[in-house]
Length: 257
Length: 156
Image (cartoon, rainbow over the protein chains, first blue to last red):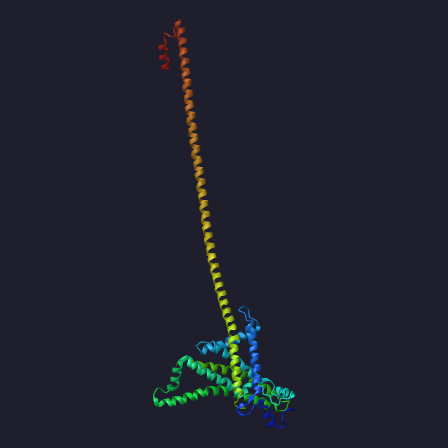
């Protein structure tokens, strides 16, 4: 607790503060960007390394690992989405592995990086990008853009617009406003629910780890390991849910009902 | 907490990562998977073809064996028949030769008999002539009684 403030409240708030520059909306969370770059580059490095040395013959262990994940994602995409997969499949892979690695950062002891950062004079350090709403919304809003893109691609601009105006209540002009409101709400609900689900899970988990860290050191192992073991389930699950919902939303937008 | 400029930074990052994955990670691995799938399928097909070829070869071998056995049986049969024929021929030849020799021997015997008879007849004629000469005590002119003597000899 050397770097941290003395009272528990200050300890918690300190841990929940981002390393940032700028004011208001123009704030940039350096730590979120940094750690998502680090995790992303680990992902790309490992997968690119495997892809460069890829062979159709007997695969090595790394290639096996990468192939397993790719096939898993490819199957998940193929099961829900029946259009061209050349963009959606790599996108889903990126979401799945990247979000997984973000979540995995939560298993790193909560004080480790803040203390290390404090040693070199950095005051704040949050290492879990998925516990930052900006990060989760960046993904879900990208997905929203893709939902609109795929909607127009699959049904044409006219078809997409018609569905927005005349679905689900019908073509009666009196009902158009209701359709419009419902579809707008639905359109907004998708990215919001995507982003908040991931954020909520990881933020809460991080908070609980912080609370556990405030317990006396001789009892921390018990709730700490219990929560960590439970979290091992949550980490891939949340990544998987984010990927699957992305695929499902895009498939719904792309395919005619 | 909250949403701020970080979001756009993250979006940009996401865009770059997706681009990179789409360009450099996904295609080669998927291609390798596809290629391996094709190779395995090919291997399985080849194994099946090999199995079928083996079965065909087995059937062919059995067929050849059967043919060869049949041919061998035919050859043995033919040889036996030819052997029997040869024996028959030799027997027939021997019989014919035997008969011919027998006939020749008979003819020779007949000839000898005739010759002996002729000789005997001449001698008897001479003896009769001598007897008659002695009986008549006189010389009979052989030439004058040639007819008589010949008739006598003919009657013998």
